[in-house]
Length: 81
Image 1 (spheres, helix red, strand yellow):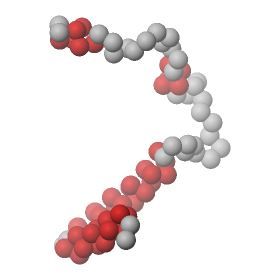
Image 2 (image 1 turned 45 degrees about the vertical axis):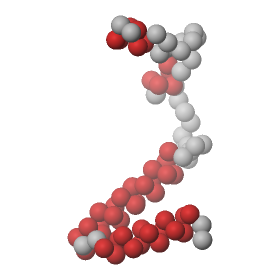
Image 3 (image 1 turned 90 degrees about the vertical axis):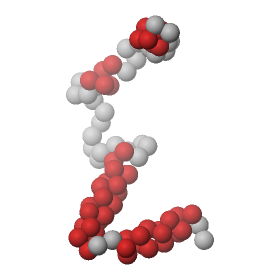
């Protein structure tokens, strides 16, 4: 039995213990996770939508700093360490 199969069985056992009024919450959460999986998985891009730096300020900033780590020396600056 695979790890995924064991986890699914354990989920079923635990779901059986829930009161009826909680089942909708579980279903909503699973639906949320499934939507996030497809939307935020590596390589995901909405159909027909190109990444447009003009519409996304983060894309405009990428590559904006050409020197080393921005966090270098941050502890000293913040905490005097």
